[in-house]
Length: 256
Image (cartoon, rainbow, N blue to C red; front, side, top):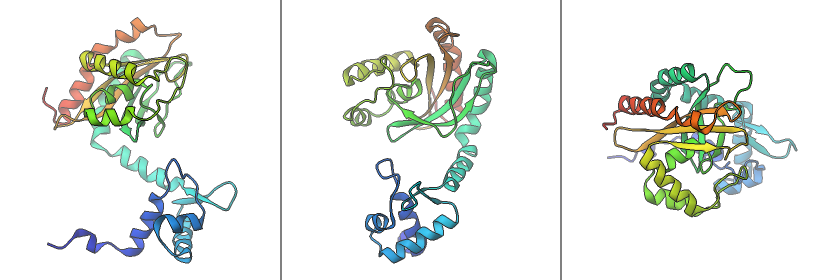
């Protein structure tokens, strides 16, 4: 059987390699850097970069000498997000939680040690939580990140804990041992909380969503300003939140 990669179009493959050479450590690159990173001649890299620039998949950095990923990629990403089965299955339950508690409700996934927000439904209060689709936050301090981490395979959790835990507030857990203990408690209760660990003045509670094979795929969270919701108020949301995530998990094929 022929290798599927034998059908790759070389020019498209090179363009994708260029886009993939941008990451958190190299958010901006010059043509020479790009050429070296992907193993292309500088002139070839320049032609492909110019094409990607013309279509909005790359844009010039502020200094004009380097390039960074363009907004056209974000638009493509959001189109994917808007059409995922996960989002479609979760949205009705998120709307119920949002209406019931009139607090912000979000759906997020775990990606490269961070939580990535796929959907956010805001409260109607004048004082609201500033969360947005496409936002990324450290997993170690967010309720959703901890809810997902608690149910990841042990080797993935150990790999995550080998890296420094980013501190967002003076309440953020930065000790791997303390975080491991909290993850164990989350596995027992079925929910995670963020008591002003990501942002002072904001509390959240989150519960995981599972796929057909039992893997954790996402988390649903309810967020509220601490001035409006005490920890007791937050914990009173745990049962309906977990019922919602269990229902979504069943819709995704998971059998409890």
